[in-house]
Image (cartoon, rainbow, N blue to C red; front, side, top):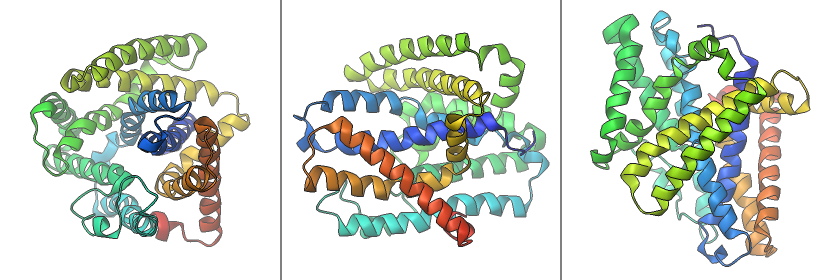
Length: 335
């Protein structure tokens, strides 16, 4: 499998990174219990649950798209390039975020700061848990490829399935539970591109989009019922179905949108190419804008707040990306 950029994949990642930013905008409001009586709070909460039912598994799925051929190029240079790409922004932007959280501790919702960041080498910090878990999943894949050569990815998938199935009985030990939750999606991502090319009629067409919307809506409805009833183990397995159908839906949307080469597809293509940068940068402007609108200016329209802070966050990310490119700081700031 080639590492050549495929436009629909960048569009797919672009749509997902926007959902990450929007989801964190929802999360910032939903986790602030002083907002519970504001109009729109319930719809904000439900919208967050919809996004959170698939968006991170869909990102792990994308992580495996080009990793199938790992065994053909497994060398120290490649390994350290991937390692740096994940570890460097984790620590740099984790530290920057921790400073802000420390200074704004009276306004933020989670109470994290520099003291929490000191444990970041051994404990995932804030939203950067994704990079931390992703890195260790990648390391597991590397080890299995070293041990089993061209069969390593199939062994990796088998291990991922086993870990996923036994996840409910795994104790909360370090990141083992997170790895067992998300490794299955990265492993499935290893085989996704070949599946999409073989079953092209299931993706990229209007009727395909309708099909995946129906499937996702049906599975999310079932998942939501069990989640509300407080049955986490059943909801955990049902979440796999929402994650897969949600990912399938956005693969369809990305393939469909990328055909038109208009401003919308170009925008998502840009977001997708710089999804890593957006992921590590977006939290600071998002939180600052939310604090300003809710705590200082006392806005009470939560949906208006959500829209404004999401736009501010995305524009801030674009500004940082372009400045870092012009100053040739990309490798320092983002690995």
